[in-house]
Image 1 (cartoon, helix red, strand yellow):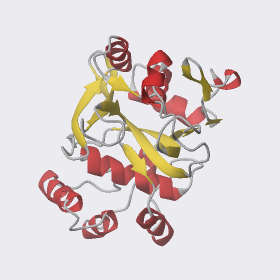
Image 2 (cartoon, rainbow, N blue to C red; image 1 turned 180 degrees about the vertical axis):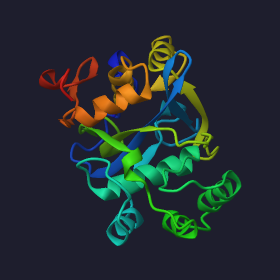
Image 3 (tube, rainbow, N blue to C red; image 1 turned 30 degrees about the vertical axis):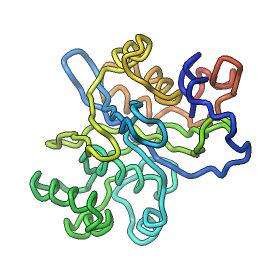
Length: 255
């Protein structure tokens, strides 16, 4: 999805086919309580990435066949809301890969967890095998389904039908970027991230900006999770305008 306002034109690709296939994806807004208010974890994509290089995003990625198989094979612990379990598996897997945070139904010691993540990143173990090793399941109750956004046609070289989740950082776990696909991670208050973006200090894409704006009014994780549990889910496919992307008028305050 394109970036906010006028900067959206910078990521637009004129040669993108208008009917490019849309891939399912999942993204997680991991949050924590801090002295000055709620903070959210953002990772910076590798500067040499072929797509969205050096851009700050929430941990996330495409749903793959193993995620779908895992969702069909093993029930989740708890519920994330009215959402296909495969998206929950993807959200948990991508969070673990990119930030080292595992949303599991049981606590796991830091050293074995770190070793398992290294094995996952090196292709030695799958996410499902790691869960089996720890006799654990994805705890869907820690991942609250928050929104659904679809990349409009003709804007980016890739299109996604993405489910966004909000979550509290798991207890006694420390977020750490994988240094492969994403170069570093930062805890930021939503308003601080938006201000840095407006000053041109960090790059962000349109849905990241809009989600930061959406959660900015909430001072604590509890407040945000209460809102997330009660809000409706409206599918958002941004409109493409000459000035960039915009949320459709009927959804500006209703997604």
